[in-house]
Length: 316
Image (tube, rainbow, N blue to C red):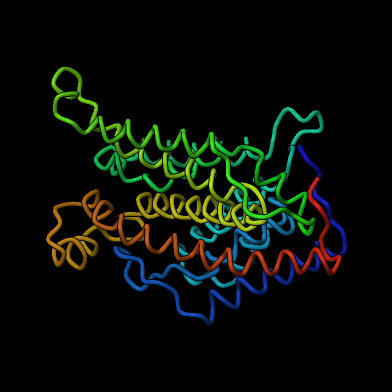
C-alpha cells in the first residue's frame, strides 16, 4: 500500500483539520436527522472530503475521525464519527494515481470498492431489501468513478498549470444521449410486453447524465473544478450510506423502534422504516448536492491556495 507521508506539514494540517471538525461539530448547528431524536447531520460532512484531497486518504480519515470522536456526545455520534472519516478516505483515494508500489491498484479502484461495499451493505439489511431503489445517489457516484477512473487523480497532478479554454468530449456526450434515449424507450409499453425493461430506465438516466456532464466539463479550464466536485460528491454519499447503515444497525439498540414509529412514521403516514427512507430520497438528494456544491466552492479555493503557498505538493 502507498506510504503515509508524516511530514511536519501534514501533521500540522491533520491537527488543524481535526480541530476544525471538532469546532464545527460542537458549535455549529447541523441538519436534523429524521428518525433519530435530537440527532443532527453535522456540517463537518461538507469539509471532510477536502481533508482527504489535501493530506491524503489515511491522514484525512484520521483528521475527520478524531474531530468527530472528540466532539461525540453519545454512542450513536461515536459511531457516526466514522462516516466523515470514510468520506475523507473515498475522496482522498480518488486524487492519488496509485496505491500499490507496482501500480496495479489505483486510487480510484479503492474508492469504487468502498462505495460498492457500502451499497452491498445496504442490500444486506432488511430495510435495503424492502427499498431496493433507495441507493440511486450512491450508484450514481459509483458509476461516475467507473466512467472517469483516473481522471480526478490526473487533474490533481496538474493543479495550477495553464489550461486551454472550454473543451468538450463529443464521444462521452454522444454516449450519454444514446443511453438517455435507450432509457426512455425502455419505458414504452410495447417494449415491456415480453420482458419488463422499465426498471432499467432510471439507472440509464443516471449514467447518461454522468456521461454528458463529464463530456461537457471534463476537460479544459473547468477540469479541476469538476474533479473537486466529483471527489466531494463521492465522499459525501459514502458518508451518507454509512450513516444509513449505522442508523439501521442501531434500531432497538440506541434508537428505540417505538420512538421512530410514534414520532416519525405515524405523523408522516408511513407504514414502515423502508418507506421512510424512500420518502426521504428527494430531501437527501437536495442535501447532498448542496453539500457538494459548498464543498467544491471551498475546496477549489483552499486546495489551489495551499498548492501555491507550497504547503501541499502535486499528487503523484
